[in-house]
Image (cartoon, helix red, strand yellow):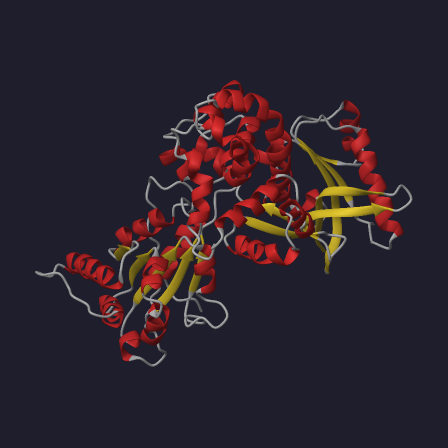
Length: 494
């Protein structure tokens, strides 16, 4: 049976994050008899520190945020802040981290107590043995652990480092009772957070800044586009303005990752991806390098959450890479090619010429991804006749016509006892009014798959559009021939 926990009230100024708060409070108030460990990660600006500081305040716990410093300086600061927390007359002094960790275990002698070490990678870089020190402190028969109910939470923004903390041969593998990744807000949450009710405007803004909460508050100081007519001016005064912190943020995201050695190469890989080169071969060709040179950068960028790899639903040996952070896609497609002009304050001129590229190279692919996220997280099971399990893209070759059909949204799921059933083939167009021609293209892809022996007996064809549908396609929907998903349905329907 699960052990009883105490529900802590969520702060009134915390937007959403209900699930994350519930998991953290359950961990922090777990009444189990021994000390436990949690690892919290997520890219910078997602609100991790706010979550954990709020948790410590709500439960009367201890919060320590590290910064880049030597081991001795970090131990001195740690002792000072722990002394202030415990109310000692003089600052506490520690010569080694072994002593400091035991002092944290001692805090939980009487009750479950959350203890947060934020920006843990800074400490571990100065003291590489620190994960091993915590491993020893949390030994299964160690009295200091068995007699403590300290709930130690290690947090960090370097996804490559934090991801390795519990994996493979890491000393802390098997020690953590909670591993939580704080993700950006999804597209619906982001629209609510920005206070944007116009669905088209919400998606355009999301194409630039994604779901990172700090970009609204700290970076643009609550500068929200008033309406669609204000969007162009908003881009010029925020993402394209050298006076705005948002202008350089995409370049700083790479700086947070310690595993990125040759940053110029990583930026070049991202630029190639933003230019539409989605396969390893095309990226290598764009950079005029052998594929072996870009294999490691792609892996590291995936570990950082800045690039995602998607496998073709119909060709398992083929995959594409896509930029995983909207602001980076925007920066490489729009800003970086024109930095010299932007630095001179010519944002309006740059945007006037770059806007068509923004719609095709940034918004178009982003809209396709949002449609896939809608299917995975918001569509009702009966929308496609089964519970979606895997949502991806796919390529269907047409050997007779010597071409291939790119399917933007491929849905596989569960029907009865069968898993992996092909449920839907979908096409997504951001700026096109979709008609029966798009439906016929999907029907042709369905026929080609059936000819190859793929079970298409329950397939439902779907059209996703940011611009609407023709009357003929609406009639086809009424006949049950196609599922239509517009912006209103994406943002508020199932």
